[in-house]
Length: 493
Image (cartoon, rainbow, N blue to C red; front, side, top):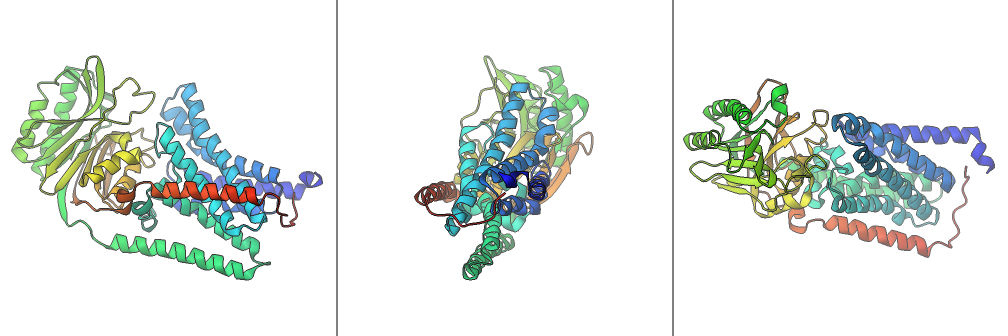
């Protein structure tokens, strides 16, 4: 207890917590700086080796909690969330991760001090991946909280998603600081083991970077299609247009822009989600209009609307294919509480083209891995995605869809109100992008590679998440078996 009041050690704990919190704050959030998250856990893990359980736990919890609060203004102001939802979001996206990080720190400390070095290194990443996977299954936002999305700009590392999905990326993110901390801890007592740890780490991360570089350099898709994207963030155009005349007027304005893109060679045109309300079989003035444009130009056109077929309502994409009946797709994963009264869809919608199979999804659908895997298993080469973001989250949420293309082997064309018009390939490269508020009717016209690439993740699914769950279980069993083992003697706070 005497150490608890020792000012230098308290100052060290504070400095440690602030360092980790700052790196978590800047390394996650709405516009993460990806290198920081590789090192964010390091100060707390190192500090835990020379502190008491209580101090290590408190430092770990508070540092991660403080860092994760970078998202709080987004939840509070942008989503206009009710208090109950805000409390839920704070719990799941700040408090629970902070508790999880605290548990990882304590598990790492306990195993390392009992001489179980390899289990100690594997425990934090396996525990965190287990948490992310279970959360992904249980809560309505899918993979939205995964640390892997902080690495979307680190393209060689992003290729790991083609093997393991997001789970392997998160695992390696936390394995890195655990290995460094273990090597530092052993550097004065067991240099041979330090050499083995360094060699193992160099081999693992060297292979990851080599795989990423090779995959980025290998061209999997040679055929291209010219894609056109449109979005308008004008004040009168952002919200869902009322049924009847207002919907017809807005879709007429979008039609004029789509007609121009088709004249400039676009063979697929994607508009945002929930542009207006359509009752029953649709608005007679607009469906035939877009169908005639598709027939005349040979361009497929995807439009997002709110379809009302009393008593049911759907967030729907209407797909106009040249010389074919109109197709529809109903959004599977609805955003609570804003879309809680809508009926979720249950089926896939695909378009067979000479370039391959094109799939349709809507915005939040691509926060979930199973639906995208279904499209991948259907040999989808191109995903067409109407969307609607919240402006401030255009980077964070708008780019989540990019990883689905890497995992399941397709390019993504995503047109979002209050977000980006984005075209990305199956390697996660953003080929073209512009803000939806860059013009009264922002447009993007670019060639997108089309071709399906079969990936290991597509074949085996969430195998790595199950590996992490098993590894975490073994680490817990190992700690239980070593519970009576005398710990290494170290100075503590």
